[in-house]
Length: 420
Figure 1: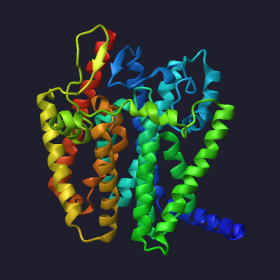
Figure 2 (figure 1 turned 90 degrees about the vertical axis):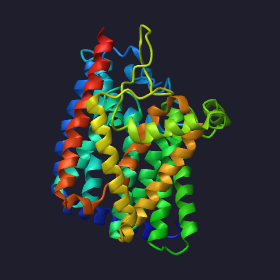
Figure 3 (figure 1 turned 30 degrees about the horizontal axis):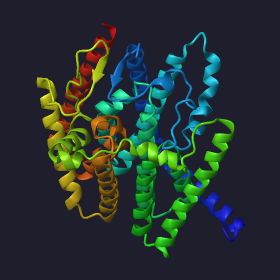
Figure 4 (figure 1 turned 120 degrees about the vertical axis):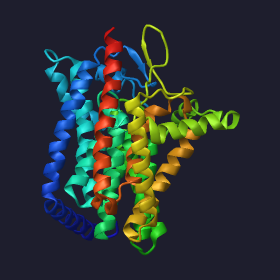
């Protein structure tokens, strides 16, 4: 910051360079746009079918979205979420004749579509093949966590979006051997504003990038980045409170409130927690079992402390998914390319953070956090060398078909339960 003119010129150069990178990948951007529009339409149609939202959806809360009153339910852990959401506040002008519920569904599904758009670009950067990119994008878009939380109006789709764009910037930075400071700061502010724990992932990815590119004074640059994002987020939080209301993220009350979700289940029943971690990180977030938990008047959806009830098709999809995941992860581990290893390190550190966090934090409702880490898990098995084998191509196509049918059937069961 000592030379503001040089800093400004540097940021302009980074913008122009980044713009050129996007132009070079214009074909995959068109593919991403087509897939994102298709999934957005799917998510909207499912969301509309879910009306009325009379149920307990894994502990998720739709009230703020169904009324579009985000400030009323704002929590400090979602530091500056109001600033991002209120940009779309003009949509209220269309209600009536369009109800707020319909607007909420459209907006949430749109964020889900954005997530698909950027995820497609990520898969292209990792595979450089259109077929593989399409397959991985379809796999992610039809995974149960992405399918469900892009249809049910909640903030989970925004959280998934922050993770995806973090991974996108990580891969671009490593592949071009450049630190796009402006974009890292913007992505950091976005992640911090959406969910404080998501910024931990962005910070870890930035740190891995700095270390991998062997920058001088790496520790200092990493700390400066974290400090800059937190400071700017603090300023934005003050602006948000002034004009939009909501909560401060830096007050002790925010920490105390979140501590209410901390439990010692890991100490009292470690095997149960380990089972839940496995289920939510690798199984039901991709291939869903039946989530119906009770027999009350309201639809109750939960996987906690329950045996997973899969259909025959579900078991086939789950077996295929686990086989492809293990093969892809193994290939990534033994691959010799340094960039792949650096990406893998960032992914493993981020997933390990979430594993530790959810070993203690809100274990009983762990499924509502699957959008934070499922994309990271999928990237663990995204391997370029496998995409040339015919057997792999056939297997992933079959997986997409059977997983998609299974998860859409589960969604249909949920919709039917709501209607009856």
